Length: 195
Image 1 (cartoon, helix red, strand yellow):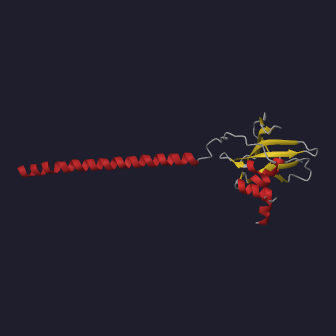
Image 2 (image 1 turned 90 degrees about the vertical axis):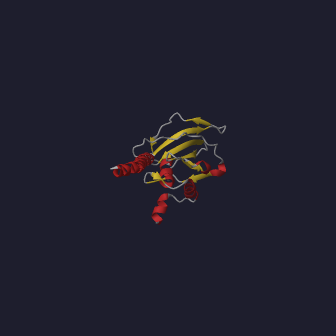
Image 3 (image 1 turned 120 degrees about the vertical axis):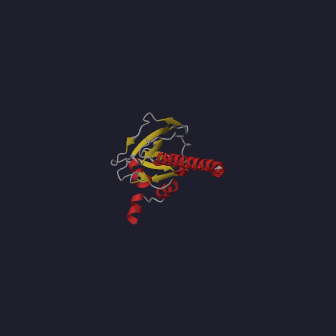
């Protein structure tokens, strides 16, 4: 009669060890499931741009433009002013806005300088600041996004957006390519026609 009891007593430590292993495996499975769920949640949060509201980055005003950096661009045959952008100021922000310095010159020689942005996703423009004679900036009172007008004589924003910065409501390449297109007078429409 003692033999079955001895067998039971001798197997007790191995049952405890078995339970500890099972509990350890269960804890690992629970931990890995929770980790995977958290990682999936973070992944969806990072890439679920449709549900995130768009946020504009904080804008830093660039140095005043220098004449040697100005790139003239074609606006329209009836344009009443000449337009150029400062090549060193063209910047694509993390918010998807292409920012640049615009210089416009009237037939009488009056020069206007502005620091602006174009948001390709909504086909809008914004004027951040106006250039002063001393090379500084004055913040624009119209610090809001406005739709870009495609027609008209002075359609400088439409020309920049459609010809150099945007394609199908997305930013068309990077700053270097934008500068190349303006410098070589090769608007995006020319690239489409060539392909």
